[in-house]
Image (cartoon, rainbow, N blue to C red; front, top):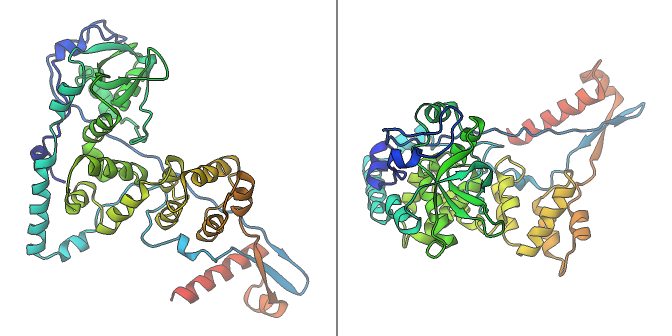
Length: 386
């Protein structure tokens, strides 16, 4: 999405008067953070990716080498359509873009432009649903938003330098914590809060939601609009929730517009729409590749209670595996409990094959059992995928 598109959408962050923002917010070097700058500072994110490790065991006897073979009855777990392990969403390949005809490209552009009319001005929303006065709140009383729409809020050095130089120009948007008196949930501004904390601020400028007007749906919508610049770079779980919130707030939205904003294919948008029925813990397993898109879609067919049972089972036992096969087994049980679910999620024991000593001597001289297993697995994969 280019800058002109963003400008037309009018999704700029709230630009508050610098003097009213700075006054009273405690910084380590001065008690007054007044500044004449009204430049909007965008929060930019970086991501860490989890590595997936496997561990296999080997066995053998005098005449044969036993090769442990991983269970392969869930080949559909590793769909080519799934997101790579731990990676943010990738942009559409340039080769695919170049294949589009000029006429089709113009049509997509027109569809994206038509979506402008449904985008609400974030400034007017803040004016309508937040108390106008900026309040300097104790940083220790600020906590993440209970609705985990965006949870990868890692600030970068550029934003930290900007805040150190000119202060926090845009106040954080917060709402009162219903469960903890005197505390506030951050609707927008987690990275700014983390940076201020690291720079030893004691208070940060905030705008507080008007509890008599702003309900949960409104706060979700504002959170999504405030993070619009991150749309092409979201993790799968974040994109799923953001797309769902957009659909709730925008009538008859063009799917092409969502594809454009999030850099997704038509199939990905369709899949993500289905995945909104998945509980948050299971949904976030997409982000590091613990489960695939296809497995996540199968999990949505289970009730909320059963999804919770699976979440609890995996939380207590990291060796459990969610596969298409065991999901179907769980679905076939009328009233599953945690014990039953845990048993069904147990990984299948390894299967063994034997290779004669003559073949081992001929093709694998001076190889260890582990090296032979790895070579055989590689040869089998190449044979069946050639």
